[in-house]
Length: 248
Length: 106
Image 1 (cartoon, helix red, strand yellow):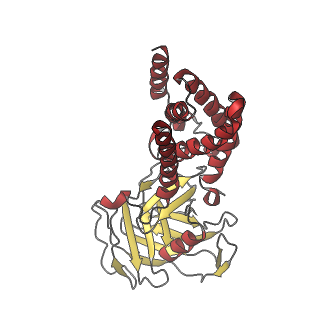
Image 2 (cartoon, each protein chain N blue to C red; image 1 turned 180 degrees about the vertical axis):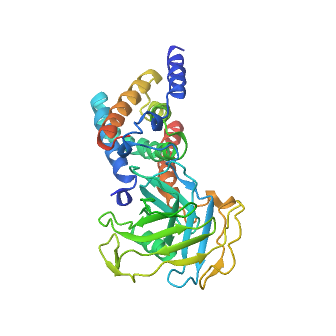
Image 3 (tube, each protein chain N blue to C red; image 1 turned 90 degrees about the horizontal axis):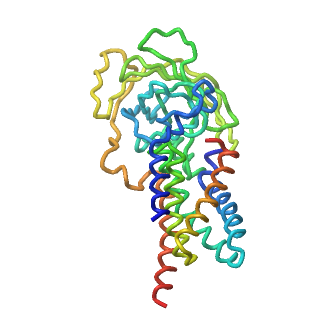
């Protein structure tokens, strides 16, 4: 009984203990862990198809008012976002080409990482903001893509350099392009105003599946395997050992 | 490089650390300790990591849950009294969590 009481006290203490996220000094951004720093679904997801220079980009919008950059995992198929690593700056929008996602997934099946950063002093009036997207390869800190949000459903995409380096070191040439206005269709349950007519440039829009009832399936979710399959296997072995022992 | 390592390196480190600690505390059953440490930590560390990243954000609470789970498994696998199992679980997890925090930070 004494041990049970001690366990109950420890659990109660743990429950009232402050969140780890809260005890880290927010004034030291390198060490700051935001409570939202976890896998989650983007609230809105957009697919841009046939959009001149950037066909197949998926843009996920996650409303993190105090978010910052870090290593971002963005599952374009399911519009699934997560961040790991240190946070240093704010960010709200994530984008990746589907082809990049699947290439990366092949190279690195455990996790797809993508580094983002945020508005860095561009003199764009609200609601327009600049978001600079960085290469997912850690060795490369150069911009791959910039995005301007005009409203909830229109973006301008622009590259700011002529190449990108994948995590395997392979260098890929990219054309340097003028900003292109994209018209997109939201696929989230959140109502988004229709884009103004006559502003988009050569784009057609399709929607991708809304993350919903299939969230717990393993299809396209790189997390399920490493977090749950291995433990289940271990628990199975433990159960088998115990059953064998009890039978003796 | 976070992407390349995933959860495997933390898991391997935890297995090594907890095997050493449990091996010191149960010196007569070292072969079992190593085998059971692999099973115990493989069963608890990945879900605990997911729990921390996705839901709780409270390392202390997650550690307590891990200690409780491992206590039960240790008690059954090593066929030890609950009191001793709790002690082993608390010591092993305190050491591994402390080293983990020192290495990676919160």
